[in-house]
Image 1 (cartoon, rainbow, N blue to C red):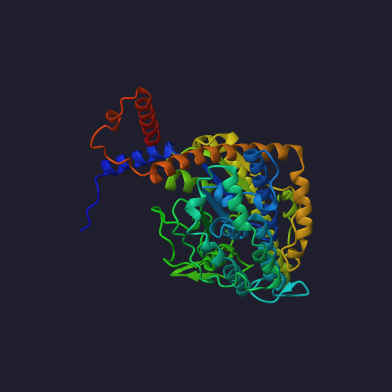
Image 2 (image 1 turned 90 degrees about the horizontal axis):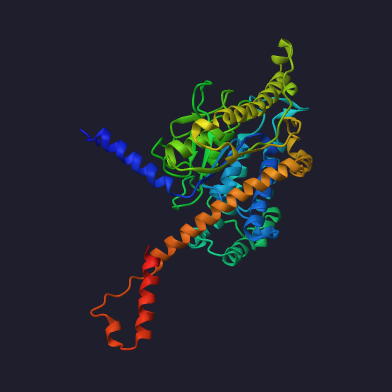
Length: 466
């Protein structure tokens, strides 16, 4: 029979962990809503925040390749649906934002362009082909998984960001491969050797953690979603020890009647209506309860994919239409709209109860474009230009600019704290120990000036060790 430590010992360890976490730099958390092709707006909102962050850090506008990557400035990214796909692109594959936008356009076009409708009416049980989604994600893996793997060896050297020059050069060398970005459109095989079955789990230590939410088939409104993580967790085991990125992407997007279910290991995932598009509550719980208890939250950013007026989805559908193929299409659209509205309700609930979590209200930021809902149909991907235009108009509002600037300032301050701590850790780890003295070398010198120099060197060495 297995022996377990006494309860008092477990409590003591938890308190010790919380105390140690409290001494670490404040957490940076990012939550990405689902919402179909309008996730392009999500990427634009994150990019604007990163642009402001660069200006806060370096006092100038960045070149396009210098825009910071979210994976370097967030400790945890959680996403649902297409927000989950974006979380994978930004956090697990560590893509820059320009590449992420191009990849996202490619994926959404491939998936939504070929739907299962005739004259706009569905003729199968689902609206879109899950095989197309799977194929699109695997294409991304083939194009970028190899590139992401090449970063593994050099990652730890890149982390301290001791000075802007080093960081800028690193960013330039990593992002300057124009062939990798242009090859995505041209079909070149320059980066075509990636592993299509790249595992979701990321073995690298001290990097941005990512999770995607997925709904177990048959769940009701009281059932918590599954978290598909890129990291090990003491809270829950993964549905499969070797879950791949494409499987996780399929699972987070498995929403009826858009896509069919997927089985991973012995678990079947399908959101039949109980799932929610906003994972912000899960992000906060994962950080404060499971991963870093006792650690301060420096900033929590929640990004939406578009806000809808409440009157927009409350339309009655006759029973006769509901029973027809058109009814399934209308049902999908209404569920989609209801979940988008639900994201704002979650935001309001979180804001009201934030004080109970210990997170300061000023450290919580919600960015969500106030625009109408696009049709949940095959032409939705073609509305990206309209989505981009509305997003830019939103970002141009004075109040949103102030919000972005404030959030960027908080991220910059935490980046400075983290850089200082990493630099000290690097010095303590890399500096060799001083050789033991068989005698005090200062005794060999009669010159008082030389003796003072040695004493000064001893004081410097002592400071570094501290």
